Length: 516
Image (cartoon, rainbow, N blue to C red; front, side, top):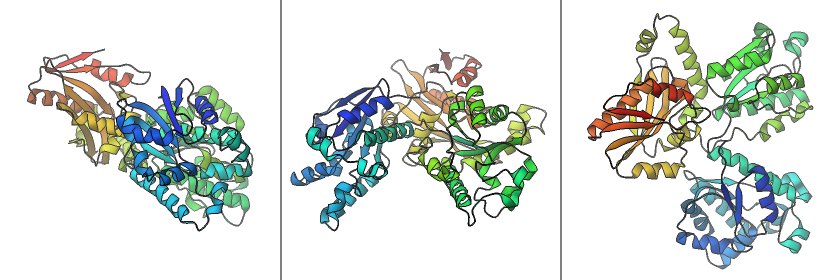
């Protein structure tokens, strides 16, 4: 997982306790801060900074709002300048519903603060700045959130637990900004997405919805899972059960929120869950560390942790009525923004199953690929496809030649340079539109080579000769630019051996060179 080498923290209060919490979340990262009460001068002087640093966390407070107002400064404009000095930034907003703000009910400042927060939320869309609202941390801690004693003794406004919650949220947000989030949620059935055991209790006696406290909790739990699906997370089932009996619950039980069509794959049988889960992961062609597994049975959880150690297996609460709060607290599925590909990811995987099934009817791989009528579109980088391009670049691991990670602004700026090119690759066939599933970045060197900086392709479309056509496109571009040859230099990681296999099988020609 990508880890920042350094973190810069900014606030109008003493950051010592916050920095301690940050260091525990980002082990090994250097943490630097401005001196107490120097945040606004630091922001004012951002235009004079000539170095670009990696990661900044800026925690705003009422004190900063007051000071900026007195100095007639536009605080939101100052904050947005962080984008010029840091690759990634997190802004923690001033809480508008904390105990410290209750005295301002009806005061014009309250409206101004709401407007400031709204401006920051709106203006940071499309940037590498992410906004966090601390209200939840403060409400969760109640009277143990704000410490007047700590403030007057050391200019520290919050108890350490608040800083711990904030640091965890910053870690989760960093993962979202850099593409290190989970892609697949695999669920058990009995006492996990519904109350009871369908094979013993019967479908009619399961607790799902209705006028029952536990049933309502399971219905809410399913609603949150369905929301996670809408964020682009793939849902699967791995359960020890009779498939026909279990599937009848989806088809016939009126309380079910989740439906059969919400799931991409399932293994419902009496086999070892570790074996079933490994099969699901192999068919999805994702990594173990992309997967979350939820099961109410501690023995099954331990089995998965032991057999498939890369998978994240959190403990479900003993109290079923805590399930909705538990699923809301999972921060491993965070996304900064949703792309069109995210929104239709379930359908994309189902289309892929149809393709795989159709392959069985052809005698050769070549005949099957020809039958798909694959259409490729190479589109230059633009404002419309930039979000998806950044996502592909930072989240793709297997078919990724150099695993270069760039922020959105860095990618755009790189592509805008002379003799630099970035293309996204759109793929469609007779089974559906895969959307943007590939990315190419290359530049012309001083000795007239076309150097392939980025060769990135979603694992979903591997094995259909699409990668060959992408390489042909670069070679053809090289000829048009009167380049000597295309140079693909592989940088190895733990996960990108598939791209190595592809390039090692390419014949060296006068217009192509592969090196390791």
